[in-house]
Length: 236
Ligand code: NDP
Image 1 (cartoon, protein in one colour):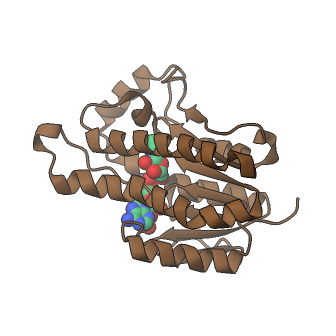
Image 2 (cartoon, protein in one colour):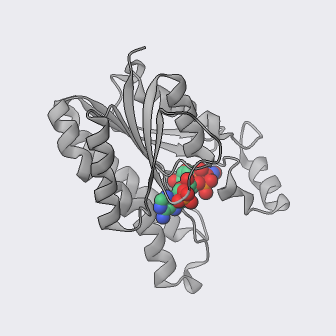
């Protein structure tokens, strides 16, 4: 397969790391923006750009560095994300704004910064990591659900803006995937969640990465503006 380039936010661990490994196996060179670096050595085709995506200026300048180095960008994955759970009655402005800023605003800034590159190239696949919670909501996660629903609205709008230039924009909505994000759940919470999943198990990061691989590839060339749930059947 010919060499391609990808930029991803997050990527130092969890789902993002699995995405990077999958892209590498498909002959992608990858630039990832996160605060910490991947612990293992993945070779010379992976480049870390230290960046807090919540810092708008730093995000824009880091993206510009990545685009300059890459030249062309085949795939952009907006994956960086955080949770700050709590019932709305006790949710601080800071916990609401931090989640919106890191999950949603960073996705907006990344798409805007790379829009010129994509529209000029007339090809590319943008894959935004939302969540099933952005589709159906979740008590105790008003901030997170709002950010992830916002990513869906943003992605569908961009899919319409970019389609005539051959640039596709899709969302993946993972269900419960085993990463440091879901490690915070207690064993009894996990048991209750698994009970509600038709396939009766939590997902693995590689399962989300396989969906990214599909949406990045020409196998999905007629798919844009969609939300694909990778959730063991939770949302149907
Ligand atoms: P992890 O907590 O394991 O990883 C989060 C990633 O986001 C890390 O690479 C982290 O890098 C990066 N990140 C977080 N904050 C920032 C920041 N301020 N600046 C730069 N990078 C940041 O989470 P997951 O792998 O589970 O989650 C990945 C995505 O998948 C998120 O968007 C999440 O909302 C979504 N998702 C996850 C689900 C799950 O069940 N796990 C379910 C549904 C959606 P670093 O800390 O090095 O900066």
